Length: 433
Image 1 (cartoon, rainbow, N blue to C red):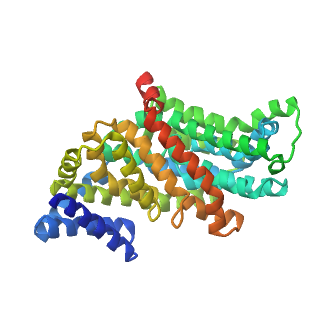
Image 2: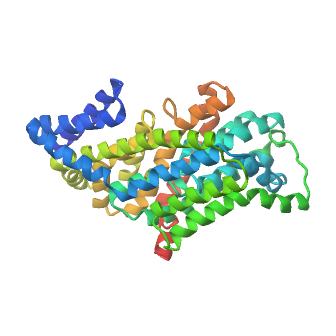
């Protein structure tokens, strides 16, 4: 019982510190230091010495190089006309499907997610074109907003994924295999969204006006999709064939994006500067949180909290289903208040030993965790995708959240299917690994 009280104390300390408005990265460092001093009875000098060594070791990780590079790649694409071409390229292929070009939200986000590891970037890039186009053409506003909110979260699940890189670094799991494990679950979520849109359109055809098109238009559209397909092939092909590590593939992806924009005369000094500034701000935020999370993880390990908590939970003899349900509720609750990266780095020191003790594959749990984080992206009050869509559409946050709810439920269905059929995540890395 003492270990449970210690765990509750640490969680309460985190919530109190973050509730005071302290930045997440500094809040994690403060909690790590206070935990060592107050719970571990470590002197302040010794605690400082321990944590200073961890800061250097965590910041010196080669795997972290992939994060700023993938972010830079997304920033460059966001400032080009690739998103407009993606919409126009997908439009002819979706016209005759029940639901029409509402499906461009799902297909566009799925494709853009394969060149950007960010959910917010995926939502913003695809949404800056589709939200206005769908409104002008008379498509159901609520389905338009909701499908984009849900599909935008695919930026975290379909590789490359920044959250997966963060998880891989913390859990010491192969990032390449993690990327492989996210492909089929990502396609599953996209299929559920598409199926829902088709069902709604068949039940109420008025939500999607009829569109017309020709086969010639479809063939011509392939040229518009070429830039995204090329970038996906270069980045994912390099990773999955083993030619390059994720960090090296990210560097190649940035180079390919720069060459592509130069050839198409879309790159100038101002766009490049804006992309660098944007990626610098985002990368600094992500990496600082990840480094200070290593401090918290070290403090928890020094206190033997994860191991003892895992032993305690194992002694409760919970079934795997009840354990997963408890973890799912825990993560959904965190998603109401924290962003995905913060959720991942704060929870793993406690939850990862528990799931390993229960016999779950760390690769599988990484995908499960990402889906839980995705749920947080479309739940108020801190759902990042909701804020992005509020800015794009001008709608109130409550209306955006309401429109997103059916897709929240569909993602829960995807999580349930993943629990029942774990090979959805594990088959590809096992087959290619």
